[in-house]
Amino acid sequence: MGKATEWFRRTFHRMGSPRWFFAGSRGWMLGLYLVGGALIAIGSAWGLGFAPTDRLQGDSYRILYVHVPAAHLAEAVYVAIAIAGAVHLVWRMKMADLAIAAAAPVGMTLTAAALATGYIWGIPTWGTGWVWDARTTSMLVLLFLYFGLIALRQAVPRADRAALAVSVLAIVGVVNIPIIKYSVDWFTTLHQPASIRIGERPSIDPSMLWPLAVNALGYYLFLVGVVIAALRAKIIEREAKADWVRTWVQAR
Amino acid sequence: MTPLRRQRAATVLFVLAGAGVTLAVAMLALEQDINLFYPPEQVVSGEAPIGKRIRAGGMVAAGSVAHDDTGLGVSFVVTDYQGSEFRVDYEGLLPGLFGEGEGVLVAGQLRADGVFEAEEVLAKHDENYMPPEVADMMAATGEQP
Image 1: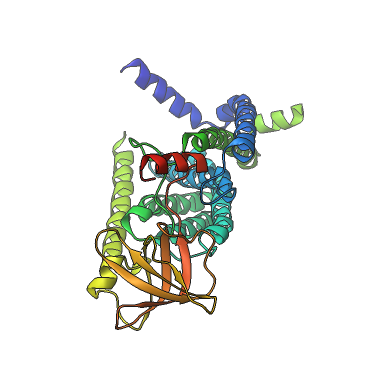
Image 2: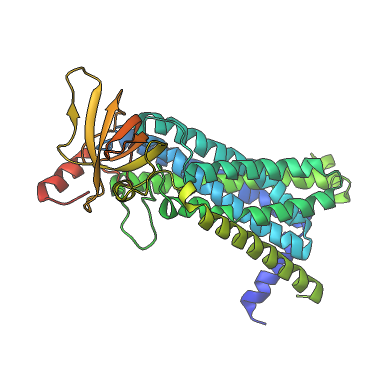
């Protein structure tokens, strides 16, 4: 077996250990908060204060500095949750289930933020905040999927059963992600197609794109930090009876 | 992977494939209903129903916007730049981003004579974001945004 495979195997098994993750993740969390927070500060100041106005929308386009990272992350978090769901179903790894429990409220908040900022932007741009087109509707479905992931866990009293049900929902729901992404290409929608596509020149001017890239990276890092923090809280909650948790609590 | 885990992985893939196929079939069947509006080609060809509340969309043809004397009445031509176009009559406020050469979405009824009587006009923003100076430069060199 190659060295890389061996490293992956060991890391995978370690990640499965709540205790190992808890001990090693504090530094990661703080680092992500720091770097992510700094990038968001730079990207937001740049985007809101220094990037030029748009030829048609004027200043109202600037809401994309929140809307685009929030919408993108909302989808990415769901994909990560679906992968964790598959890992949990195949390996019955407790950490994968805890990761879903930690990430779902974060994804839900991001989806709500994307919908809210889209509504606010739509009023001056389209002339309406909401329209039932394929993009907005599939994004609303994503919000309900997040509601479902959270509610289903609370509805099933036994934690291991709840974990299985949530994992299945997570996997089935992931088919909504390609629909969100390609809705603007497959159907006629009021929402415009993507401005940034892999392998093509972005149709957003570089002077507006750079602050967006900085902001998006900042959001990604910061929110991974938030998920880690939530996961640490879930670990303490779930492992409350374990000796190492008691020792940790007493040491504080 | 142990045989048990391999079996579970197969189940996961099976569930995912099942959900994906179900959804793909449903979307193919409902495509016309998921589409938000009729493009000019379908309005002209008669695919869009007459006398029913529908939505249509396209680009506002350059030089076609005409306001009437009473103030709120406006008419314009919606085109796909590929030979299909239809006239829209509308009475009401236009969104701020409405303009010639920009995207538009109209909701209302298509009359038998091919004119679209709109009750609502929305601006459809495209995927281009650029500062005014860049737009001026592109206009000067004759490049389309």
